[in-house]
Image 1 (spheres, rainbow over the protein chains, first blue to last red):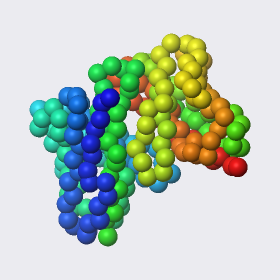
Image 2: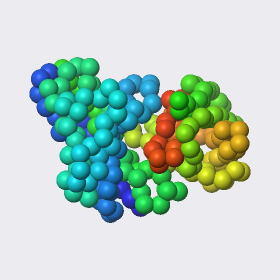
Image 3: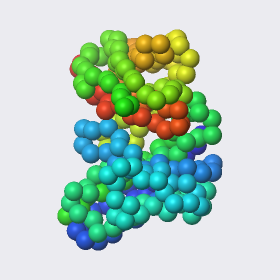
Image 4: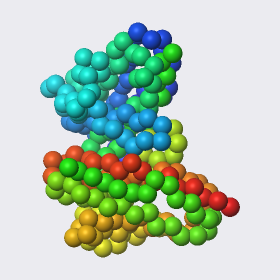
Length: 116
Length: 109
């Protein structure tokens, strides 16, 4: 089945530093990758949609200069949290839509970011 | 606006049956998904309904009524490992997923 590999699984960084999260589609081409953030006991919140070879589309309220998304190839999308602050601590998950709708979306394993 | 409602939390007993409801109001409809999410993990796909009726898959079944904007996930023969959050999501006319807040299911022995 379609698999998205996401890493790192968890990361701790200092305030003011940047963190890069990678998502790779292993056995299919992901023309579109979705980036979500999930705070404890809350549902998934879509941050942005990245399309291969073009600029990402950000949801309202998400700072595009803070959350840099790059989708340079059909198998790799990255999210960089720049100048991280403690309030950016969250669970970040990428997701790609599989070609057949009935399979829905396949998710990466998620990245737990803690900013200290 | 777009809205998905599901109960925040439910409790059930091991071996029993539980039904988790989901109601939705979205701009267009291209199917409804149920996902299971254990704490600290990414969601995993459970079911997809696009036509009215019941889809059965082992211990899990999912029902859809498009005219009522309603779906439910039915879990039978509950096991302790079924303790998780269950997320209802609707694909709208733009093929974007609209997520419910999730239902935390607690299974007691």
